[in-house]
Image (cartoon, rainbow, N blue to C red; front, side, top):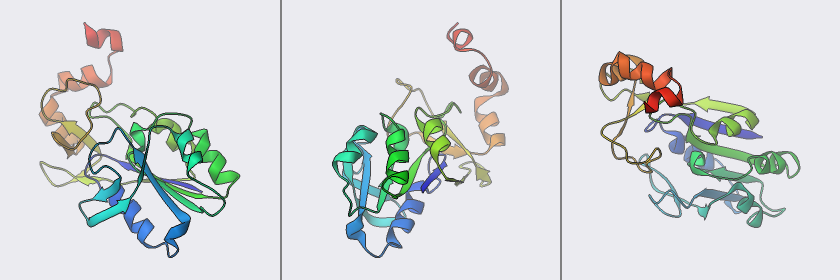
Length: 193
């Protein structure tokens, strides 16, 4: 079984995974992973809702998970999966062949509302997807979108700083209809012109 928790920044994806982790009695059969590229809370799956967090193994690719699991592992967690690389079929293999329960947390969209790197592939192999919405930073309504305040030097900026969750109405207010059209509709070549 593969279950993915997804949604915008500050929606509680990691908190949902930690809550699931805390319900498991025999923790010695569980392994937690997160990408080395996520330099926040290195080696810990952490949420503001759960103090110390859960110790995690830093990896770069899905294939590396195979180095850490054996027949005694029944459940794995992968946090910040949007930053992972490699072949997501490793997760399908572990779920089907090793009968593992796999819980994944990751952003579904970038702050430009585009699919986030490897997440479409992860969502495609998931048996269950829970889309968790945040609270809009501006108005308090349900917020399915992440918005970045300021200028980004890179397409992917790891961390929480500058990112806020917004509802569609507030996203449009902040970005404007012309910029929103440019981001969501125009081709990559047209955006660069």
